[in-house]
Image (tube, rainbow, N blue to C red; front, top):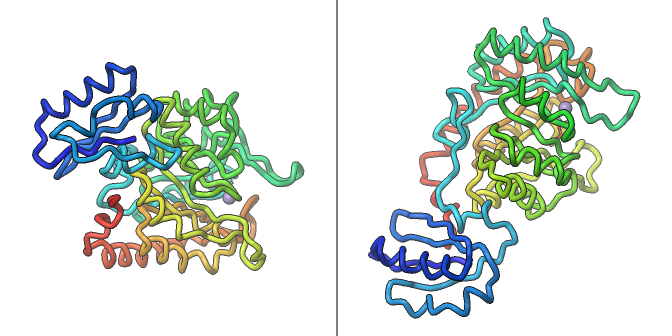
Length: 345
Ligand code: PEP
Ligand code: MN
């Protein structure tokens, strides 16, 4: 439940509400908005209803939060969360561009790509070292060697690196090498892994599960936030539908929905979303127009030879052209105070 204070309520008024709630053993989270203060309550509704909060003159109303996610909800944290990664801020005024190969394949490959991403104005380098492949016979990634190449590419370019952590056991190793921990779609509901990254002191890029509802996705974010890690970046990467011509159906509905429901930044992965490189630029532009804070895109110098996801990887030249386009879309669609729509009412 949340307590909405009246406009003009003083800090002492807020303190009175907080003291009442804490006195009953309830958890409290105060958010000061531009016009009014909201006090979020963590604990059973029955305990809140026993208290005479609504009759206090400084209180506008006490409203139930109907969502099962709390820390991830806008009601608890009305302003947008911004996440610092190196010298870039995700969820701020600049569009975030993350790019790289599906898998790190060799030292030369990742260094060449990293230099190109940097030159094209990208902010982070992606690359899988431990790959969740549908077939046990497919390339599984270079493992720690791949992580070492990623770290070398970071040294060479200054780009922070994003890579998938597949299980709890490999988390300590990943923490030595990566700047952002990616949780893959297949692991979105690996609750032990969510709890483990919830204790880590690094940003987490949480992909939406293949068949996850938005609510399930936000509940997974809630696991990480509840563990104490507030640096969660959501990533829409397409969901399973009856359509087979594309690999997945990129659910761009999720972008404004999540921005309404949550304060967490949301980025889009058009590569896995459509599964065919030809459609990636169009869906990248659409994602940015829909309000996404950024993109994560698969690229490869020679997609036909890629060891994974070559069919959906852009060439370096196509990627550079696409970045120009999405920047223009970003400029053209952010002047209207769009973010204001996200505020709950
Ligand atoms: C990937 O990023 O290469 C990947 C495996 O993504 P997802 O978990 O979204 O399928
Ligand atoms: Mn991939």
